[in-house]
Image (cartoon, rainbow, N blue to C red; front, side, top):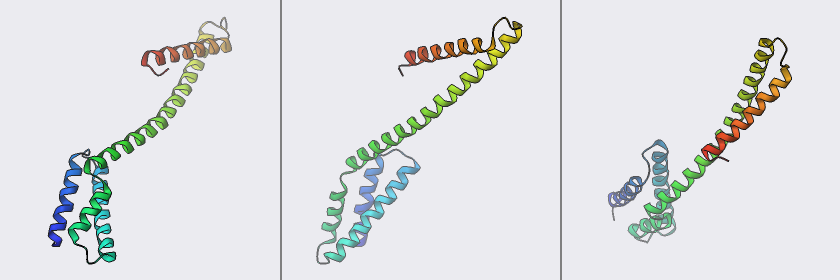
Length: 148
């Protein structure tokens, strides 16, 4: 079996795999890594078993890697885990920013209320009431969006 035939087998495997994956830069990197892994494995197997047919060695490597469908499924599972981890990080940041914003708005609103009413409404009392409303609004919104 010639090098061109081996290259054709590998390219066909990569092409079948690429059809099952999303078209993005990560996929391109994955396919390049996959191709490198196949050729490195092939060279290694040729060194330890030089009398073996190259076709058998390539097919053995591809069998060890799994079918294109299995590779795509594994990639999808890893992407979901990565996306979930990113969501958790961004979700935490979202809650912190939202909490700080609610506090700032409550303090400013309480200050304005205490000034407008010329001290009839105490500043600290207004902050507590407005923060209470912010917490209630937060729970209502969470209930409505299904996050609670």
